Length: 139
Image 1 (cartoon, rainbow, N blue to C red):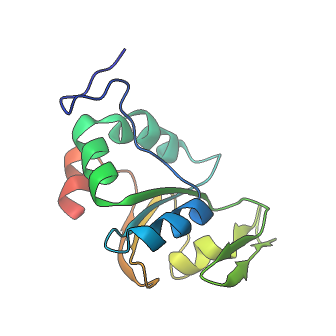
Image 2 (cartoon, rainbow, N blue to C red):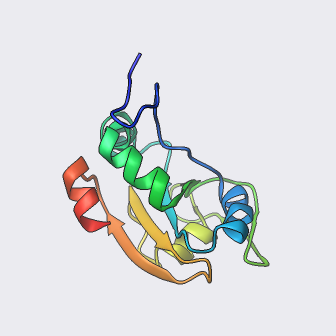
């Protein structure tokens, strides 16, 4: 059992899907979303999940300062976000979900992380695997 210096046992990032996060942001508009955009086949995405995203300081930083979101860039289901419907589009070997494509400003690479204000403005795009201190420095 992992315990946190912040007093939480089995502490981890409290990931939400984008629809849950949008509802939560209505009551906490001062907290931006931290969106982890990943794919199921991405090895570096899995490495983030088993290393950086388990680091106690990263967990604390993200859970307390952001609304954490996991977004599969290749999910097939439509997403309604900010009153727009985003769909999956077949392209290349597998395709891409248009919400991920739009958040990444057309430069799909994984893993990527987007910081998004309550108004829907992208303030940061961070690309690639990051060690805990690297990610915290960029945030």
